[in-house]
Structure formats: structure tokens, C-alpha cells
Image (cartoon, rainbow, N blue to C red; front, side):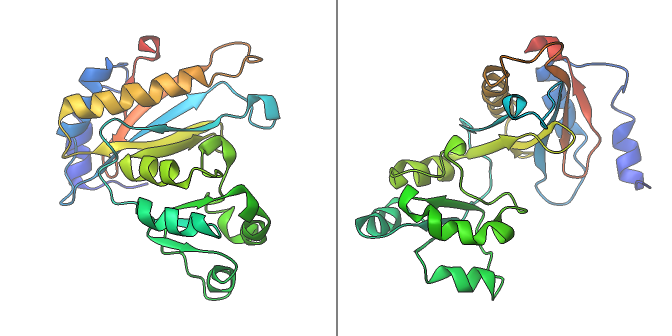
Length: 229
């Protein structure tokens, strides 16, 4: 992959052989952000897990103390008084059966997170082929299948993010924006890492955190010293 001049200049600031202290990594990532927009700061965690084994799967959610810096649109599937509760909590879209054809046939996907009450999962299950590949399927582990729709919506709006292993056993998650103060990015990173460390599968033998890399949307990766976590 060919990189532009700006990227090459930014990459010179990073020593690829060094595993930086988290605070140094955060400062460096902010320094190497050269895009004209407010880039997202992402963390990529390579684990020693084997996601093909159910007991080594990692999936969960954490509320970042300083949010993600982006506006998240929430769709809630519910019925009865839970519809009004979801609307009152600030959900962007609320509904039930009538939303299925809109998503299935019209390709409507103007939302970032889907929450469902347990009694609606039979309905939402019909959207598995659409929502599943996009990582939008509600899941009890992520707190998106719940009767407490107020808490679910509030948490998501406050900066709740989901983390899960991809096919290469890596976790990719946003921890804020380049415009955030260093201290706030650091707090978000620490909150995420605390949750990831707690999620370590008890059956795992060998090294859990193989590498942690921090980067911006367009910038070079900065390795973080895994021993810090």
C-alpha cells in the first residue's frame, strides 16, 4: 500500500522498534495526525486467543469516561410501554415489526447501534443476514438485549463501545478523537484496557495481550508496551 507524503513524514516520528508508554503513545498519535478532519483514535489489540473456540471468544462493552466524540444513532426494537420509554431516553428510531421490510427490502441502515427488548428478538432475528455481517445484531453480552432500554440508550449515547475478536483474533475499537486532550484519551484507553484485561478467558494458556497499537484514521501505528496492562 502506497502512503502519501504527509503519512511518510508522520511515520518518521514513530520508532517502530519501540513499545511506548501509554501516555507517550497518546501524545505521539496526536502529533502524527495530519488529516484535515478530526480523526478517530483507534486501538488494535492482538490477542493470544483462538476465537474458533467458544470459551476463548471475547465480547463485551465498556462506557468510555469521555465518550467517543461522535454522535451515535440508536434504533430500539420494542413494544408497548417500552416504545415510549426508548423515545424518552433519546433513541433516534423506535419501532417493531413494521421496521423489518424497511431494513430488509429498502436497505435502510441509518443507525449505528441496535437495541432490542428480549421479547423482540424473534422479530430482530429475521434481520440476522443484514445486521449480522455489519456487527449490528443486538447481543446480551454487549448489553443491547435488555428490558432496561433507558440504561442501554443512555450508556450508548454517553460513549459505550463494543469490543469483540475479529477473525484474526484482533480487537479494533475507537477510543476518542484527535481533538481530545491527551488526559481524556488516556482515561478512555485505560478504561477500555481494564475491561479487556478482565475479559481474559480463564482457559487461555500463554500470552493474552500480544500487541497493542494505537493509531489515528489516517496515521501510522504506535506500539504500546503491553506490560503496562
